[in-house]
Length: 318
Image (cartoon, rainbow, N blue to C red; front, side, top):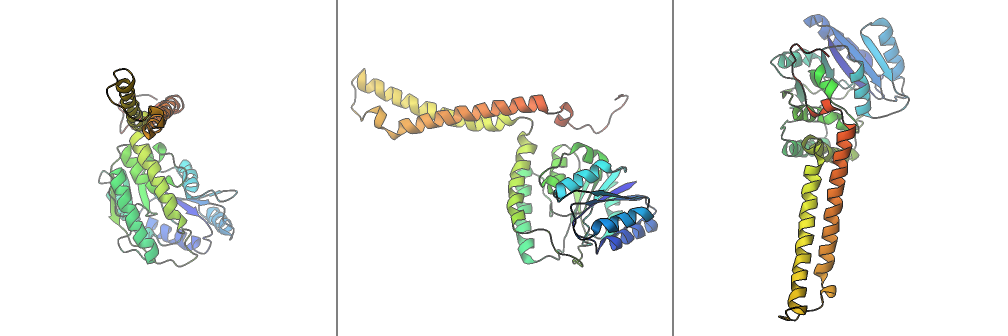
């Protein structure tokens, strides 16, 4: 079974048509597809459409939030409810073409765990296209996973991927990166991007700032998530070493002036180097302490299974 998770926010005009197109693909290619609509606090009657679809189609499910919690929360709720072996994410605005589903499944069956869509010919305004290209280049540089379109809303992956990823904030756009960091095989295919027929885009310029901050989070999690002291400790040792070196120089200078009477300089207490060295020493010690505290948090709150990813087991009983 293929499970399609569709986050919905004020998309009542497109839901019937989306359902019809998915069922058309299902019949043409002899698939079994369940659709999980997650209403993320819609105020336009989207939930009533979802209710009607669920009443006439046994493979349609609906989840309704009390208010808008964001796309990552909607996807998490949908992923927790899936019954299929393969999961697909798809937006409800009809810009993603359900006719692409067989191509995604075919690519997944080549041995991949995640197949990401790539809107090769993107039908969006320039102020969304060019910042997106810069963002995708930054993601590839910082994470090592080079894809043309990390932001594409249509993705397909095995249910094992969904079970191992924890999404919050806006980390849903980094599912391929998070999966790649855990050793899953990730690839992409070009998709047909259709013009928006109903509604309006839910994303504004704030999205790019939040996306950059989330990128820093992902870069840290995928590199130092289980060993934060390696990151914070390196910074702490640098500042601690610089502070210790500065104080050592001042101590040597004091010996030369007051014990051996070799040279005369201004008093140590009036030199800027003293302030810089003490500040650097304290900053280094605090950063090292934060790194140790972070290690304690990871060791005592993280699940052991979060530290690795099992592809296959033989003769193992849970």
